[in-house]
Amino acid sequence: MPNPALLVLTDGRFPAGGYAHSGGCEAAVKAGRVHDAASLRAFCTGRLHTAGLTAAALAAAAAGRRIDPLLLDDAADARTPSPALRAASRRLGRQLIRAARAVWPDPALDRLVGDRPRGAHQPVVLGLTAAAAGLGPAGAASAAAYESVAGPVTAAVRLLGLDPFQATAVLARLAPDLAEVTAHAVRAAAEAAVAVETVGDAGVDALPAASAPLLDLYAEQHAAWPVRLFAS
Image (tube, rainbow, N blue to C red; front, side, top):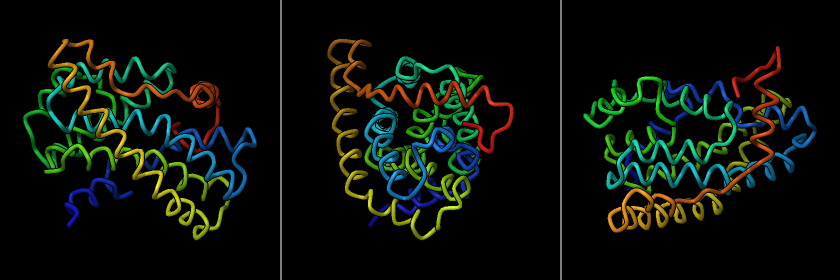
């Protein structure tokens, strides 16, 4: 039976700030790349297998607690070329850790706040939060992968006036991809943990670094807009 904590952590009502972010969907809508359910699914599929995979692997590695969270935070920084996305990720990390410490108090979360007072990257915080909630690497990876597409899908309803039933169908039909990305992330996190234990900090390079250059470009453009509906 799935751990109920996973349901709490991925619930859109969990006060971690994700509802204010579109995951690049707002900029994609303005660019005309997302305009209906089919294009939304294509956008989410691409995001899931790039940014989503990277985030899921970082979260799984943090949940496994075999790699220093600060090393993972540095790895997340290196995998986020866009300054706007780095800022958004750390802002979300600050919001998540505040909620997590209230719901699932844990010394590892307290230490991370002390070590990264300006905020750690959201996937790293998510992984530590998952561990504090009694979830393992698979649960953390699943949560990160789901969040990478749930945000854009929810945003598309507001941005496009998309039928909520169609939007939910897009998310449901991504289930096989979500399972694939979660499994990939868990394997990569385990391999990275072994590599770090074997060769030191350089072993973190075993984590995925799947890139999505258009998302980086969209993030920089979006950050410069004087008026926008979402924070990112």
